[in-house]
Image 1 (cartoon, helix red, strand yellow):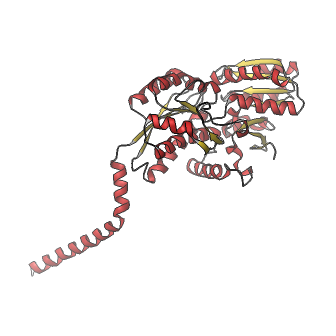
Image 2 (cartoon, helix red, strand yellow):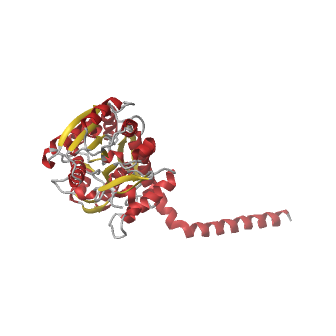
Length: 394
């Protein structure tokens, strides 16, 4: 009797095992695909962002969108059956730290690097990437980042195009006297030089020219001088949180001139920090901040709305143009790896030849002569109304 019970028990185990094997067999192709992807050598990509420190409002959303993109592509099986690994470094917007981070990534044999977040850091590491022959897709705006470079690209709109969009509007409105404010970092200095150089082309007189340290917490002294110069317009150029203080100080002083910001204002955290002092500010930027205001036939709208909804749902935070710059940079690298070999030379060549790439910054058309791929029309004139970014036309 004991042997009969044992035999029955063994049969039951066999039946369960058989059923389990059948269930496993149904999922085998998907499971095998995931296992194969996990076992394959990863495609290593580097990223350098200012996740903490003085430019964290740029770098933190950039790191977030990259994490989201990597999770998404790996959930779909990676690229050609290989998982994607993005090695993210925090340079805290410090040029020495940025060079050290890129050095570490080069030793990791990454196939490309996206970032850094800031112009100064991008200028600092660009020569390293040129020397090593590794594609760098910067998330910073300064036009000089890509000038004369073979291996360096960037996704934000050029700073000189931003200046032209501002001056186009200033001239259209009959303004002739302009005051400048700018931070003393790489982005601010580059913008200031361009604003100065292009003013005569538009028949504009610069009646005041003030600078400030990105870490400054009060710009009353500079704005008092500007107010005394009686400008028609003030252009404030920085990516630092100090730009929100400029707006608050200007309101406190009763400054009546129209204030323009650079595209470095494209973050809801800057808007929140400025409060009602930001009302009526005008600035050119990519269209992602006002995606729902765009007409349905705009080629970017579907991407912008979808990306914004996914990002905000995942992180419970507002989308920013800076997250968009990182999205464009990494998506270009992903595309290159999907369409060519995940090899440094092939990635470089693919990006340089890429035409009609619909990104958050616009529709990119790269070429050997243009490693930004965007023209002035990629910029939308935005303003702040009732505490929200919206298109100026609306």
